[in-house]
Length: 213
Image 1 (tube, one colour):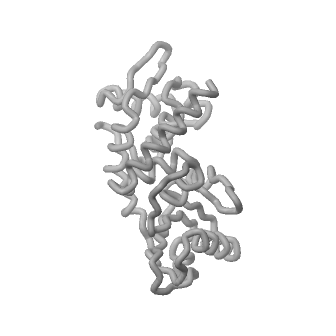
Image 2: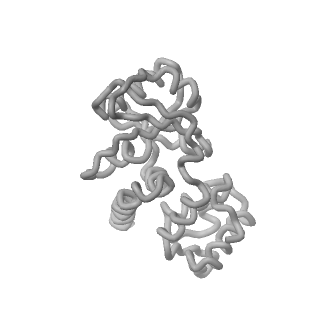
C-alpha cells in the first residue's frame, strides 16, 4: 500500500471510513478539515488494494473493513504504544478501573480506557481479560501513581498517538472510555486476542448505524 495508514491524517480518514462505510470526499473534508488532495491520496490507495470502491461524485464505498483493520494493525501494533506496565494489588477489574479514573482525576491527567475495558461498556462479552488498557496524557506519571502489588491484574498504560483519541472520549458511569470505533481499532491492534471481540463490536456498530439511516 502506497500510504501509511497509521500516519496522523491517514489514520483519521481510515477511522472515519470505518464509521461511515459509504461517504463522500467533501463530507470527510467538512467533518475532519483535511484537504481533498490528502483524502484522494488515501482513497486511491484503498482502491488499489481493493479495500474500497470508487462511486460517483467522489463517493467512497468501504468494501473490506476487516482487511482495512488488518492493515492498520500491522502498521500500528498496540505494543508500540506501551509506556508502562503495572501489576496491581487489586483483584477486581471494576475496582481497578475505578482506581485509574480516581487517580487520573486527582492528578489532573486525561485518560481513557480501551480494548476489553472499553468493549465491556458497549457490548456484553463473555470473556474477561486480566489486562486493563488505558491511554493517558502522562503515562509515566500515571504508572507511578497506581498502587502496585502482586495481584492478578495488570494495567498497560498507553501513549496517545493521535490527539483525537482523548478528544472523543465518552463518560460512562464516571469512567472515560474511547469511542466504539477506537475500541475496535485497538482490539485489532492488540493482536489475535482481541480480534473476535473487535469483530462483534464492529458488527454491532454497523447494525445500529443501518437502523438509523
